[in-house]
Image 1 (tube, rainbow, N blue to C red):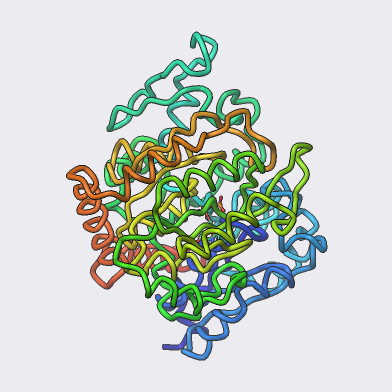
Image 2 (image 1 turned 30 degrees about the horizontal axis):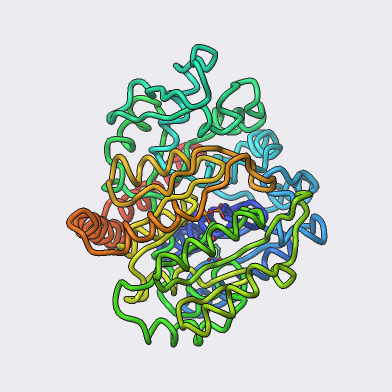
Length: 476
Ligand code: UDP
């Protein structure tokens, strides 16, 4: 195929680091597999995080490249300021690049709040990427529209999210701050969304059919469901280097898993961003130990009592615990980054204790592993409802209080709750066998969705065709 003349040219402008960057890179790779000439726009230090997989794609003749814009700060690889990091220093380099190379479309992360106007001025079709799925989108929209928080007697009084296909109940304590008070939704994010050409969603129709329909037909959002995009990672290299370099040699981890029985290990991770307090780390450690279950635990940055980050190495609770678990051959601890996809897909892994980030949730689903849900911030409490109440493929640890990712939370989830949830999920019972059966079926559906003939495969092609039609219309 002559890519220069026939293929559409799509730019992908992911956020810098974290859980938003990973799926957008995968999305760019998926579109390249469908013949779109994909260019990823990023900063030099962020490019290092995925350069190897793009080089491998290029060697397989996929039409994908990275274009680096200016650096933001020395710390941007760590995304230390989280989603609030101001990326507007990239405005001028982006504008110059767009003026020289006009694509058929640009997919922009919603956290680049400033990017809408300049792209619209250049009349380039703009697609917003929010990083989450249809279900959370519908819950957020209907809560914002219909729920009056002042009418609730307390932060813990359940309210019904009206108008949805299922009965979804939440409490104010679980709702992100920006949803409790609509004036707090940054205007720029709202605008970016409202004036866009549509959105690509990392999800698949069979995962949330009623909510995909609701998003399109009731919310009126032009949405293409193109996932699960993580399934584009087929080689061990791609799976192992996704995001960052693992802090433990992946082979030693796999060897350890090889020594364990099928479905006997719990994988515990709270995503790329969340910082837990030392006190919470202690409760998790004791809870895991009491459950007597083998585990792999990814411990990210830890907060001390003054909300300052501690390096894991200084954390005495963890040091002693890790030593003990090693001696008993009970658990492995990653202090930093783990090759999540490689671990999750191993036969020995039979459960996933997750913070319910959208990506982690989908990745758990894709390997057919039931979950213990432990939401912390963002829209994670909503994702928990999908996992436990709608799909019935997980048990709740009992986390009740939304908090920002980098502050000590009001609520401490005690060791008894951890132990209880782990035993409940990992010990064989009729209920858990049913969960396993359900999630395995969803995993099959996920694989079919991205294969030729599947719904996501068709949505990607439909999107490409629509861009071609736009190109034709703008020429006549
Ligand atoms: N991830 C990983 N190793 C880690 C921690 C996270 O590979 O040690 C990946 C994980 O596979 C997922 C992403 O980082 O793709 C986290 O995204 P998610 O939406 O689950 O949560 P967030 O980090 O945005 O809170």
